[in-house]
Amino acid sequence: MSGQEDKALKLAHLEHLKAEAEKAYDGMYDSRYPTGDYTDAKDWFLESIKYAGENGFTEEAEALEKRLAHVKAVFRSQFT
Image 1 (cartoon, helix red, strand yellow):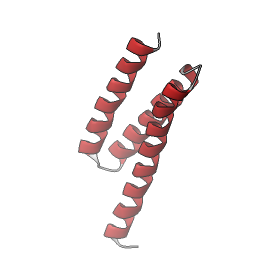
Image 2: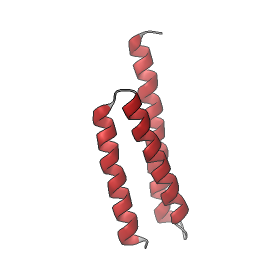
Image 3: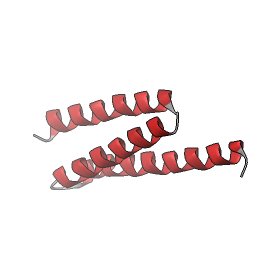
Image 4: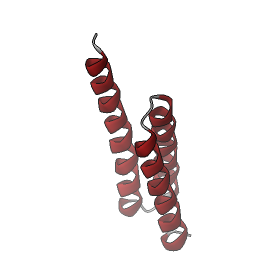
């Protein structure tokens, strides 16, 4: 596998992790009990941040950290 193929696979996996995080975040709005979706969203975002950092996607990790902070702020202001 070439370096470009490896990077493409890693980016695809990161996109999957991010999509799961966003799906859980969206689920907060569709649920009578959003705490579970919030917990899932946090877990997916944390996994995404970790994966991005471990694979050298520093800017992406920073953007995900900001997105996670936003999700936390939304939950605290709208659901608690």
